[in-house]
Length: 164
Image (cartoon, rainbow, N blue to C red; front, side, top):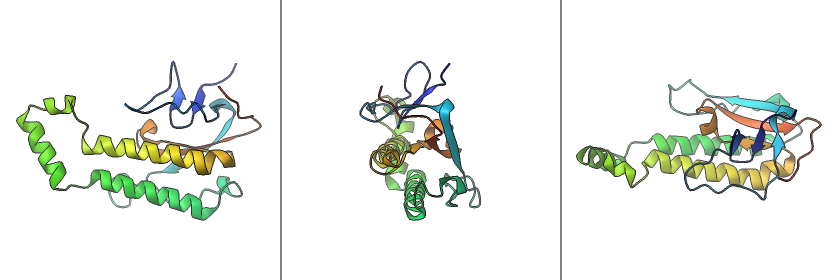
């Protein structure tokens, strides 16, 4: 019996891939079963409060699989993007005022700044998987699929990557 199927950028496949609105399924990338994977979790960094930020400590399990500078660059970019998503500026202020004026019906027509940034983060993770992680036998999972608690990396243990 095989475990759930994990598709880069689409999360656990339980009755179908979990895709963000407008996200395309990455059929051209390999798929793997998560039951045959070693999992590495990068925890949230709560040292500066509850804002979304992940620890940049290099996990020993990734030693020899990816270099520290590549890992650090990815986590730094994710932290920067989440910081940008949570930033308050005049455009988010106007967006919220307009939402109040329209009884929040505007959100039926447009995405919030935060939703737009989550989509941008998902695209970044897909691009990183295509160019950096999958060629090294790893797969980075969008933290939004884990409730923004962890960044997950999967590595097959004795499993072969296979096409869908």
